[in-house]
Length: 156
Image (cartoon, rainbow, N blue to C red; front, side):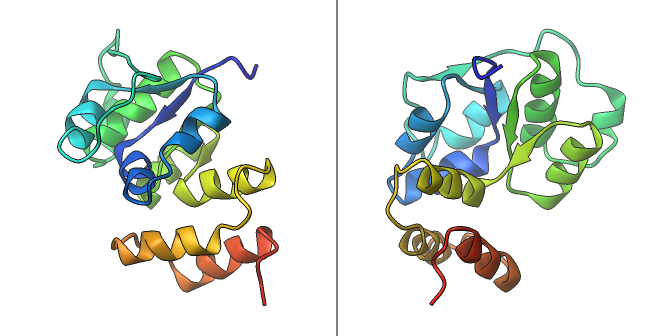
């Protein structure tokens, strides 16, 4: 099951690139795939590494997903995850996460990637990285910030 691909939306890739930790994705996941719209969304700010696979949708996006009023990147990300039976979807935006959960797709966000990296011993601490994300205008509620630090055993 771990050889199934992971599908990412644009915002986690952009966020991790902003704090110079995009490589964590490669260290955590065997195969990372992005759809065409995500390629378009990240290309102006992120140089897409060769270990991220670009994958076209082979079927039209379902009307159910299109009616969700998500952006095109989220729609393609969720559609591709369903189409290729991804083991995980990486999405930050709440509406996209809600829809992915409704479709029974396992979901994490950028903070979940950082937490996974810490739990696997790839990072000694994540607080400075989360603070770096906040400095780049990444939005995190106070409750989520505190909960992630509790989960990472980084409370004072």
